[in-house]
Length: 131
Image 1: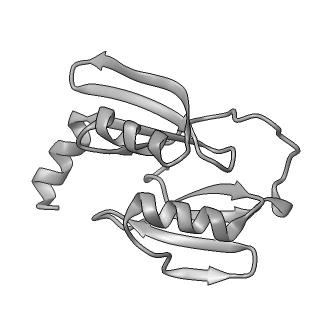
Image 2: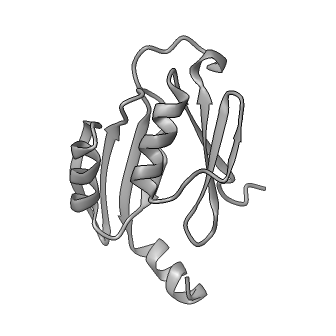
């Protein structure tokens, strides 16, 4: 039934600033732009990451909450430090979960949760697919 993640969307009251911040973090420019929306294709599987103008947010949340989507990285501590240097704030510290899993999460400068993870299963998939 569920085949995997297609797109993750976050919100920002300053779409241009958020697009620039994520372009710096991801090391790529958005591939798609239209009024109120910017989208990136990320990684070997071209996962979609979109930023929507906060005017279209369906709720009036004022604090980060809800599920955290974790992005696969090779070094959680280094990526977490880099995100903090870029103006994110710590939400959950680097945490060793055991058996090849390490996580951390931050709040980006626009109020969205961003998780990073070392995940042995993802690394195995990358190896099998040659990505």
